[in-house]
Amino acid sequence: MIKIAELLPPHPSALWRMVKQCGIEHVVGGMQLYAGWETMPKDFWPWSYNSLVHIKTIYEDAGFKLQVIESRPPMDAIKLGLPDRDREIENVIMLVKNMGALGIPVWCYEWMPVFGWTRTSTTTPIRGGALATSYNHEYMEHAPLTEYGIVTEEQLWKNLEYFLKAVIPEAEKAHVKLAMHPDDPPVSPIRGVARIMRSIDNFQKLLDLYPSPVNGIALCQGNFALMTDNLPRVIHHFGKQGKIFFVHFRNVKGTPYKFTETFHDDGMLDMYQCMKAYYDTGFDGVMRPDHVPTMEGDSNENPAYSSIGRLFAIGYMKGLLEAVSKA
Image 1 (cartoon, rainbow, N blue to C red):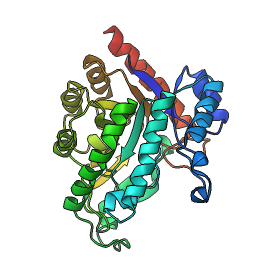
Image 2: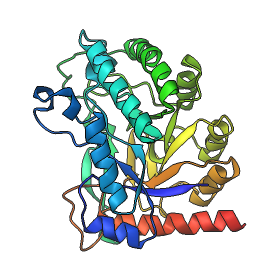
Image 3: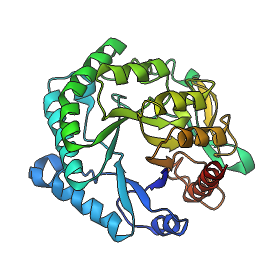
């Protein structure tokens, strides 16, 4: 059964109550990362058992079931193949083991070194004057290199294989699924840093690199939509393999090099057919609305995560799910 969830930081707020009033029972959470964690005893690191049980009970006390962790320990040394990578891998393994002990089934991670999801505007006006995030690669073509200089795709694949060989056996023992999020945007390189999780073929390569029941995908529709002209077919492709572990249900308009994020009902995807594809292939995991426009009366201090926009998205997703389940 498909579970609609929401991303909620582990700090109760009015949004928690609004989401609960919308009928949401499942939550995607994050670790409480704080400055100076390295100086603390390991039992109190953000991915320690003590820290995770604290987060889990915060959600449970509010009536939510924690299904996915969508934050990560520092991982740049792993991705870049730096001398400190084995220590970072130890932290990832600690996280996975503790998730397994607490029954948290999915960890969403990504392979974007140095910087994560990138936009060139957070104030692009769309329907009714709502503000959306957008990307225009022309603004990045002459951007300076990062401190790491040129990072090649070959380096990233080699380091990913090293990571998978170290972590997947531990994840199998812990019964925790690893869901790889795509590059955002799916363009390579940006500022000299290559991106490898940017095509359908490369995601299949990821699955084939280390075949395992716990090696899978976080299917972020906003990025996958820019990789294909037939997302429902892609959902069927990976869904039939049982490799979709987590879904970001969102919509966009444009190309990998120039796109705008939209309301869920106003982009280039056929959202009904996408929902139907998940349903028809037996996806029984968590999906959450991802980036949403900032609507009238809400703050744009946290672009793409407007509270009102999220409530609109939740209602839209619930309607689609009911429609496909009764068709």
